[in-house]
Image (cartoon, rainbow, N blue to C red; front, top):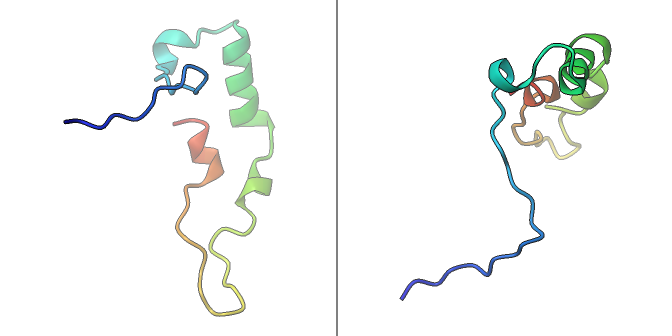
Length: 71
């Protein structure tokens, strides 16, 4: 018999967004996307990626923050 996880109606959902079809010029979403891509300095999120710990171990692989928002 299958054992399903208990469903929670308050949980979040991931919804795919197709920018070329859904983010139209002149909308709030388009403006927000433009500001994040072109005007906001996201380098603050890059700090610490790939640094070496005192034990000589490197931090795990991670995606670059500037790529995540435009994926």
